[in-house]
Length: 417
Image (cartoon, rainbow, N blue to C red):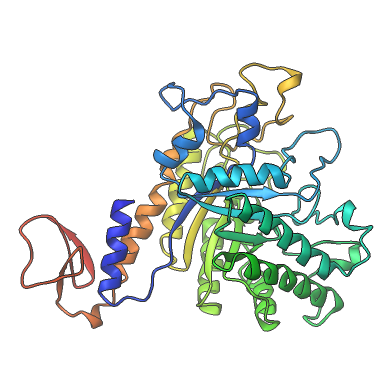
């Protein structure tokens, strides 16, 4: 963190445009549940650790994401991790803030998972005799007010989760598709819902950045079309949030094409990869793309995926955030199997701790390369034509000649002797 701050100060003193904060983090929505049943966490050498502290201090994460459901309800009998009501999120959010980290609040606006297949309308809302735009505004405002009063003010607010096809479906007629007119009833309803949620965010947490989260990250033209429609209808947001799982969303080249397209189309918008993950064992049978020839479903393959992803993200200056999804996965819960301490029924095998040994995976510490990659890019991005043949110290002071040792900047490039 010391180096990051140094570089940012240096860049600002050289007349660069203001740098957006680089966020590295994870969605840790299930960590309190694992802790509740005393699930052990170890580093890769087998030393017992506090997972939250380890992610902050050793993995260098500076932001954490937490999902929020209206009235958490699992679908069927399988336990998949739907338990995050407002009190749960308030407690975890305060813990994040007290640790000096940023807090990304992920509104699902549903009682269970909201994603491209499900955007279920909350049951408790069905009996409210108000327009849905009023309901989402009031709910968003009330939740944020409770979080602020509880010492858990969000720094980022995600208004909806993977909402490529709209949100809060009361019937299939509410679903949005890009082959529909941008002025269709479905899309107009979608714009209004997002605008109502954003209005509440601006009123209660004016310093928070608003994220609109979609998951068509492997489809550049579709992603561009979605955000073009939102912009054309004055939907208020700051950051384009994307999910990227290569086994669902295709190659890193496809992701890179999407990121480049967004940078050109929306130069004023940051991009956060708010969800990503990869298997360390048992590659999923329902994967859309078999990526095992590129990254084996092994701890080494998982780590290689992170390295390659970070390399790709380093090419795109509009990307300012990276979050790993469900790193805290650690078996079913508890030190040994017991029906009374089941946190999740089945394993996803994409977490950053081994489900059997409870040891950290190599990929966990590999994530911090995102920070150093972005840190280097911020220095290399100094415009040479604005500072021809100039030499600067890391504090931004112009020097007469190159120092004999240490770190300095010459012609917009960082140099070390």
